[in-house]
Image 1 (cartoon, rainbow, N blue to C red):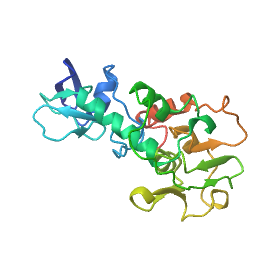
Image 2 (image 1 turned 45 degrees about the vertical axis):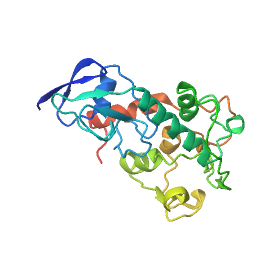
Image 3 (image 1 turned 90 degrees about the vertical axis):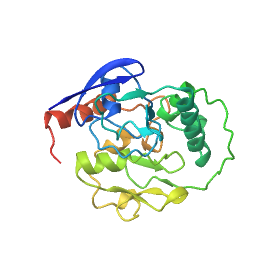
Image 4 (image 1 turned 60 degrees about the vertical axis):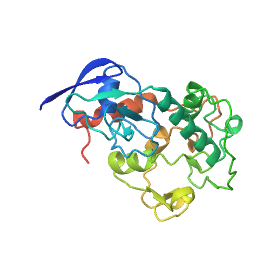
Length: 238
């Protein structure tokens, strides 16, 4: 496999042909913000937080979907990109009801952490305050649609790792929602294996384990590491 030499944030790096800018950057210690990406799962470019500037390109490029090219010059942390990412986080916070003080992931939420990192101390947009439901029909887990950012991590891990494809997305735009099977309550699903993988990859408090307090609600990072490496080691085959 051929090797590509490129420049990211002024550093000369190399990556294998077919690898994305995101992967090569992270392998070289250059962190690019993201919410929808999880190593080991397919990428869909849903959150757009990993957009980067490529010299000579008019449009921003999604780092998780753009393969590296020979001689490419990439910038990941310009003022333009920081403002772009701040606006995305504000849009996410305004779209649904992210009230951290009553969320099970308060203090352990990737969206919350990213907002703090980007200096989002207020939202310049009008809050929509939608009236969304909470599905607690499953005996072990719950789904709070108010916290969902539609990153589809849960959909992909359910399909690509567990092989159940219980989760999916219905609707369009602001009316999009994560559904179970064809829209049944989670607890009535015939396909859910109750493995909990979807809960572990959720970056917010949208998917949670029942019966745990705020302080106890932590994602299993060891499980996420397994997701990242399992495909390379062929520990599971799609």
